[in-house]
Image: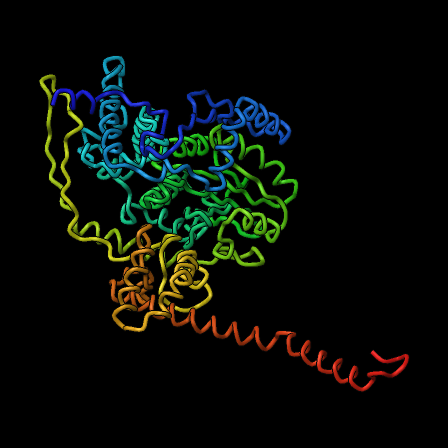
Length: 543
């Protein structure tokens, strides 16, 4: 038992993600993820830099990276994620959580006497926040996944997150200062900014299954910076609820419009400098990894002035994962399409002078329903535990399992099979994959004569489809979200898919037969035989 306990608490090579799964290769940390001082931290005088200065800075940063490290950054930007970061073994996850708690206690305890003021995390403990509870494993896993299972960096990210909450909620929301914000926590002005639609979460994922968050350049300009950042915080935390996005990262899409302006726009049309500093802190502390930044800007003087400001404000780690597309809206969309982004879902009209709000309004309705379900099922029991010195421990709150679950799925995964009709559903990656599986079973299904054999085969197909985590989903037309159907309904979908496959195969054979040139070839041969018979034994001119 002692040996087992020692093995459980033994230090793990946290820089090697291969410990999560024995099949994963050992991957070194990229240079952009090492502990370095960000040379491009945003400052007000950074606005005087030119695009040439930014290109020189980016070239120097890339030169410090090895070929393998540059390839890793490029692959992550395109959504190629190593298996070690996707497949998680429960025993290794539990070990990482133990190390996270140990590192957190060491971080909070170190230098406490030298600090004159409490940190944001210590204030969260004093306010009995549910987020600091060690049993809240799902929240801590978000930081571990965001930092690719590097425990020390994950702890620093989380402590920065509470510092950000302390700053951003300094004047409002004191009763829920260190809790995850909901729609009810936002002020009337913040709700107005949220409903404006300048920032939207696309209803579809990209080609590799990542969520995409789009933002217009005029978002929140002229509004109070804290209100704008609280709205952005709400979007990021909504994205972080999706486990696939935690593992694969989020795609940030930024596009500019010359005609659309913010209703809060000030005279200079820019955010104040401290907005970018707080925005940088939000990027560094949120429990979510942004794997790709895509900027769509017009090729004009204003964009050439704006490009260096954006690149400098991003910082080193995010700058190497950024791409800027310049030109017309059509040219930018073409560039995004080559990267696998669902450009048809971008909430901008074809002319670029209007915002589409249908999907955004439906998303807000689903968020409200989900938060109401969570509020109805959450039961919290709080208690203050202090040690002999009077210091509040981190184990202050215990949250029971929610009794009410949100009944729907907001955004289907690429592996899911969607029930319904239409081109959008038939082209969904999960439906395409199901048709491929049906084709592999089609001969066996057609050769089965007994109904019992066909039924058994449909369950075998269902198992093959769902073993990767795929679900069979059907859209609720009244509520707007997707719901998972039962196994019997899923089997009927498979039977219908087999019938449609057989119909397409028969139609394809008939089309091939009708369009074949064999009939013309046979006719030509018959004509040649007749000519040869008529001219047999004749002289010159016969075939």
